[in-house]
Image (cartoon, rainbow, N blue to C red; front, top):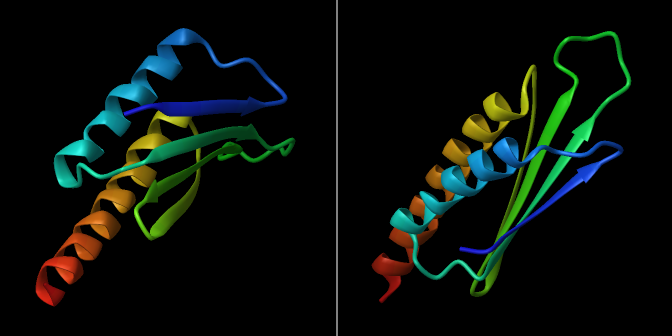
Length: 100
């Protein structure tokens, strides 16, 4: 799956990009009709430790899912957001299956 990763106001290192790509590839196990996915990495300027925002938008035929997580690290945010996406995609797949 092609993952478009955009980091806002900073440069993401290749390890982080690879980590996100590997996690996103796991979504293909749930649903093989994913058209594209966009990942946005943002850092909030606050004194709060949980200032990393991981936002992901996944497009599937006829729908799209958006999940936004705010955590201490982008890896933690990626895991949480992708787990949430996995659940949403499974639900959608079950709905489609029950209608056909």
